[in-house]
Length: 191
Image 1: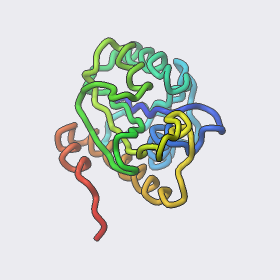
Image 2: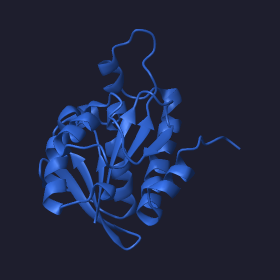
Image 3: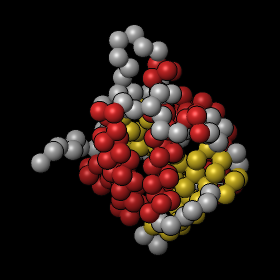
Image 4: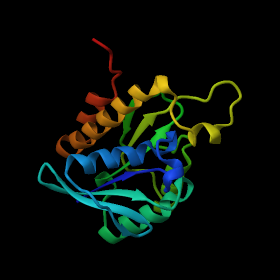
């Protein structure tokens, strides 16, 4: 069984914010596979789905972004998940809005939720999917930026990115990390 973990902050106050794109991807996957109501467990919400005949747990930690590791660690321990069978989906300010980047392992790169997961698990050897949310303009506070909503001119790009990210998770389940990186890390150009 694979764990697909989307990061974000719980509560209606944070719906549609840059920090919640991980939640948005998990919601898109749940919608595709007909799951209506998440269940609660280990300080998170989860949904069981079948992708390519494989059982997948879609997880949205409810511990707030900076403490995501508390929930993730409990799921990983309970299900005795191997690092290669986990993917963490999060926002990334160092990527242009809507850009996807899969990696098989590596540092948190400044993403505090990802950093907390690495600290709790004691390693960084699990795949992650970063979704670009762009950098704040001028001297805008970083926290205000990631907790803010997308501008009107960004909404189409991020909606497309969430759909493409969900497609890439399905590809990861079916094909593995290397083919998924080749297919989905490249810049999408308009025809």
